[in-house]
Structures are given as C-alpha cells and as structure tokens.
Length: 306
Ligand SMILES: Nc1ncnc2c1ncn2[C@@H]1O[C@H](COP(=O)(O)OP(=O)(O)OP(=O)(O)O)[C@@H](O)[C@H]1O
Ligand SMILES: [Mg+2]
Image (cartoon, rainbow, N blue to C red; front, top):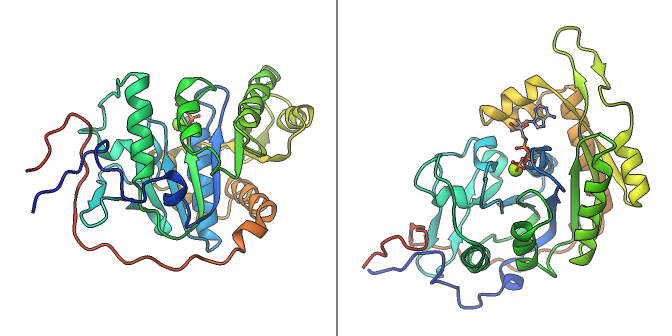
C-alpha cells in the first residue's frame, strides 16, 4: 500500500499542536541563554528522574541544529516510524519507557549537519511537532536549541499556549546573571511560567578525594535566581563519572546509583513534581486506539514511497 511519510506533507487530520499534546499533563521546556551549559543533560535527567518516580514521560529533542538527547539515552541507532493509519509519528522508546522524538532519528548518520534555513525549519518543525503521537503522558520535557534567538523561539512558539513551565539552565558565574535574565525575559514574553533555575556545574566532585570544590564560589546560581525573581531548583556538580555515563548513553544507570550528584539531580525533579503536583494529579483522558501499520519516517526532500 502506498504511503507518504515525509515530515512536511502529513499533518494528521485533527492536526493541531493542542491536539497532539492533549494527553500530556505537564509540559516543561529547558532553556539556556547560552550554549554548552548542560541544557540537554538537564532535559534528559529531569525526564528520567520523573520516570524513576513512576511517571510516564516523553522528551521532544527540539534542538534541530545539535540534537544530543538520543546519545545521552543510548538511542543513537533508533528510528522514527509513522503509523500508516493515522499518519502520526511514533516516538522511539528509551530507558524506563521514556518516549523520545528527535530530528536526529531522521538524519542519515550521526555526523550529518542540519543546514536548513529558518523558514524551512519553522515549517518543518511545526509540521513535525504537530504529527507526533505522544499518547497519554504525565510529563513531556522539550529541549530547545541554545540561546534566545530565532531557533529556540520558533520551537517555543510552535508549542505556545501548551507549555506549563521553563527550566532555565545556567553555570554559576556572575557573568551568567545577564544570560539568565534574558532567558527569564524570553520565557515571560512567550507566556511560559518560569519553573526555576538549575545551576549546572555548581561545584566539582573530585574523583580522587571525593570532596566537593566550589570553583566559582558558593551559591552563585541561587543568587542569580533570586535577583531575577524566580525559584532556584538546585545545583548539579561537575562530575567526571556523570560525564562518562552520559557519553556512553547510560544516564539512567547513573541516576539509579546513590551518589551526591544523582541525589542533587533527583532533588530538582522532586521540586518540580511538588511545584506541579496539581497538574500531575489530573485525570487521564480516555485512551485512543492503538496504531497497527507503521513505516519509516523520511525528511523533506527524501524520496517518497510510491
Ligand atoms: N554536571 C556535569 N558533569 C559532567 N559533565 C557535564 C555536566 N554537565 C554537562 N556536562 C558535559 O558537558 C557537555 C555539554 O552538556 P550538554 O550537551 O548538556 O549542554 P547543552 O547546554 O545542551 O549544549 P548545547 O548548547 O550544545 O545544546 C556534555 O558533553 C556533557 O557530558
Ligand atoms: Mg543541548
């Protein structure tokens, strides 16, 4: 049977973003004013942390230019499929049952650079996001591209109205203050409640003596959050063991170990769960029919099956 499965041509019948996200109770987005501060780590950790607490969880890796979530979850070789009946994209399923959708799954190889220009990205992303079949989820965490420019704006706007909170990730230098303020401003302009600030690399956990060193001084993240008038969610140490687990796609195994760093990460999750406990306690919507026939997802410009 012939099926068209590119990410631009198959907006599903009900088709709106509100429709695809209607079975998701809590939608969070991670933001950072600058790149490389640990945003994807926080996205993946928060998602896995919620899953460890028994919630059903999804991750939308919205970083089209540098998707890293699949690698962190050991899903680099996964593929997305399309349900032939509904035309919806089916997420890959990672550790602890976390559902993952990333543009990386649709790219030919690990090293392929995405060089779409903004208008194509805007349209492709909107269509892409609107076609995912998340089903019933307690929590969806969205990873955005770094910064507060066009790329994160496009994705956040695509989900506008649907996001319940932003997690702003920063590193603990005083220079980061301005960057956090920008991210808070970005969030407010898009009418997304700021859930709070996570201070990544708050300190260094030395593998030699096991001691924790506050390289940039103590509580910079907390001060930054306070001065921006938003909650402080906690700090995550710079931990070589965490880095090792991340690089080998075993973040879930790291979080299951009882270490200072994993406790710090799960404390952030518990704060979020407490903050949004009413949303998480909502009744589930009635379940939809299970999909049956599936086929591979293709990118715009790729050959369509006849
Ligand atoms: N607390 C930490 N301890 C050890 N390594 C870390 C920590 N935080 C981040 N890293 C490492 O730093 C790198 C960057 O982290 P990550 O990819 O999460 O940043 P990002 O903000 O998402 O980057 P980008 O802006 O490129 O999307 C990763 O290789 C990760 O393994
Ligand atoms: Mg990232």
